[in-house]
Image (cartoon, rainbow, N blue to C red; front, side, top):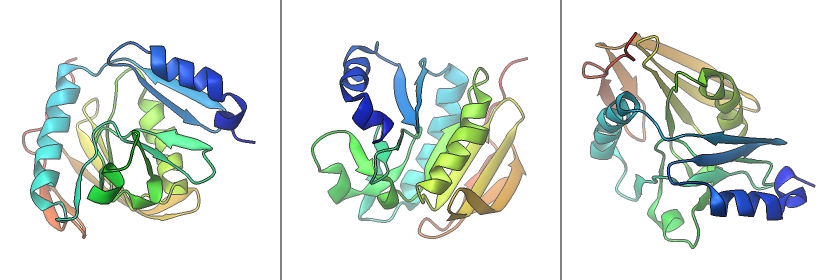
Amino acid sequence: MSFYERHRDFVEEVLRTAPDGVRVEWSGDTLVMQAAPSSVHQLNLGLVQRQFERHAPDDNMFGGNSALTTPDATKERTPDPTYLPIASLAREGNTAPAEEALVAVEVVSPSTPGNDWVDKLRDYAVMGIPLYLIVDPREGVVTLFSEPNHDRYHARHDRKFGDGLRIPDPFGFDLDLSGLVRCPD
C-alpha cells in the first residue's frame, strides 16, 4: 500500500488547507512542503519557460502546477513547469501521468537544493520523464539530464549562465542562458 493510500485523508487535508503559494509533494513515504519562490526564482523560471513555449509541440502545452504521478501513486511531484499533452490537461483534477510529461524543469531553491539535485533527480528518472532541466541560480549553472532508465538518468549536459544549451526533440532548440540571474550573495 502506498504512502498516499495509507494516508489519503491526511494528504487530502494538507492539500486543502495549505496556504497559497505552498507546494505539497510526496516521494515514497516523505511529504515535502515548500514556500513560495523568490523573485530571482520567478525571473529565471519565466525566461526558461518563455523559450520552451515557442518550441513546444502543437499538441502539448505548459502544465503549470500540474502534479505528475506514477501509476502506483508512490510518487507525486510538481515541476516548476512541465509540458503535457493538451488531452492530459483537459482531464479533471490537477494531476497527470508522469509518463505523458515531455520535460520537468526546476529552479533550485537556496534553502532546499537537495530536493532538486538529489530527490527529484531520482524521482523524475524513476517516473520516466525524458528530460529534466535544473536551473541553479546559486551556482550559475544549468544542467540537462536525459535518457532515464530505472532510478537514474544516463546523459548529463552542464552549462554556465550566459552560455547556450541544446534542448533535444521534441522541442529541438538552443536554450539561451544569457538572461539568467544568480542569487544575490
